[in-house]
Each structure stands twice: as C-alpha cells, then as structure tokens.
Amino acid sequence: MPTVEKVVRTDAGLASELRMSVMRLRRRLSSEVDPTNELSMTAMAVLAALHRYGELSVGDLAGRERVKAPSMTRTVKCLEEGGHVARRPHETDGRQVLVALSDKGRAVLLANRRRRDEWLARRLRDLTPDERDVLRRAAPILERLAQED
Image (cartoon, rainbow, N blue to C red; front, side):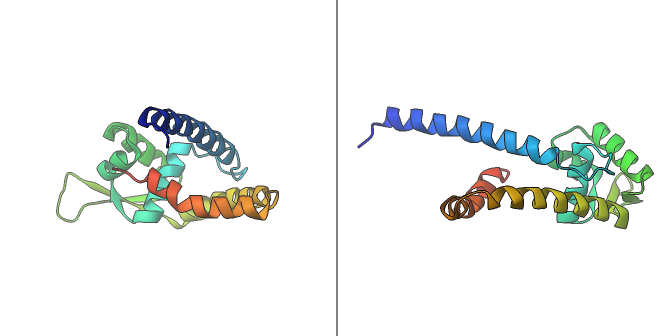
C-alpha cells in the first residue's frame, strides 16, 4: 500500500501532466479558428458565455471571465460595434446593462466550434478504440474539474 507521501507526489505529478496537456490542447484548439473570424479569445469566451447562459450583465460577464468590469465593458463595446451582441438597459436596475448574443455572434461562435470539433474528431480517429474509451470516460471528470468552486 502506498504511503501518503508517495500518493501526494503521484497526485502532484498527475496535476502537472494534466495541466501541461490541457494547456497544449487548448492552444492547439485555439488555433483552429474560422479564417474569417478576427475576434480575440476573450471575445469568443463572451459569446460562449452568452450562448450558454443567455442574457447577462456586464458585471456577470466580467465575473465569469475573471476580468475587471471596465475591461469587459471594452470587450462588449467592440462586440456590439461588430454586431455580435446587443446591449440594453436592465429593466429594474438603471445602473446595469444586459448583453445578449446576436444572430451574427451565434453564427461566428458556432462556426468556430464546428471547426474545432472537426479538427478534434479527426485527431480522435487516429486513436485506438481503447484510447477513445479512456477519453470518453475522462471527459465528465475533466468537466467536473473545470467547474468553478
């Protein structure tokens, strides 16, 4: 039976390996963008949040993306100027602005997701059935790790 110290070292090693692998995969997937898309990763993350959660305030978006509100305000302004989102005043709180995904923003987001999914599906075909099964079982665990505390 392994000692507690040995398990900790093993878990630390696993953490390091997972961190590096996930970061490399993220960078690789980030490079698989629709060639007509000129939006930053931050802007794409805003579109994804609006697609997933619906209309959100600038403050909620800033919190989700872990940036300061003025920075998110600039990002939202650029997205609005490009026709990717629409802003409107909050019904009951005049200090807040709500942001919604536009049809154009949804189309850009889905085109990029489709391109990334196609790239990843091609890469998955190169794996053995056992390797794909391991990833199939690991996907929900990775999702759970990614959830906010």
